[in-house]
Image (cartoon, rainbow, N blue to C red; front, side, top):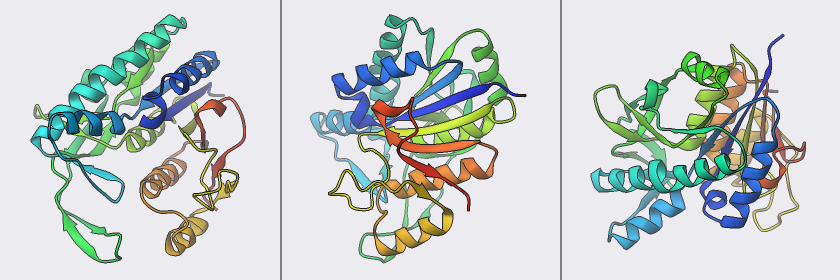
Length: 268
């Protein structure tokens, strides 16, 4: 019987608010057993870029990353955001280690090719996302070695291509791939947590949480517009994890990572 492991992914809106971050770190530090934290930080990157006179572009919930934006996200994700989280966990007795995908070769990716994207107006366009990485593999064995030594990985949304290039990579994707890579060794629960209670049927009603979403539901919700924007890739990553051995995927609020409420993702 495998031991349990939690992979917690927390979005930028949570890690960039002091009260929300402190609550999250306190709950995370209280989780028993093996655990990994994956974080975003896109809003901080957007603000930093604006301060530097660099315009941000988002398409389909994904950031377009040119050479200048890659420098910004590297500074913000691997520097300011990651180290604040690591310091906060150390203060709570958690022996955390901040990692990009390049560190110990834990997540390798390739530069995303031109990709056909459905735009907000329903048309399809070929988009060059720039220095954005699509994950090829996550090194579950290496992560297991760290975890066995009592280290808690805190992973930032940057990967590498093995040829010396850093690539901006969606944090939900990293969380999903890491969870899948650890599934042969642990019974993994993957939790995507952000500022809402779960996936909402009505974006203006915080109580309209959809308790369970199957793949069939997901397609219907996309067609109707109930699910759109950044929630689409989040759910795509959730279903990918379920298909590849992760025991459970939950989308919930950051102050409920110990609970059972939120949206549960099911294959059927």
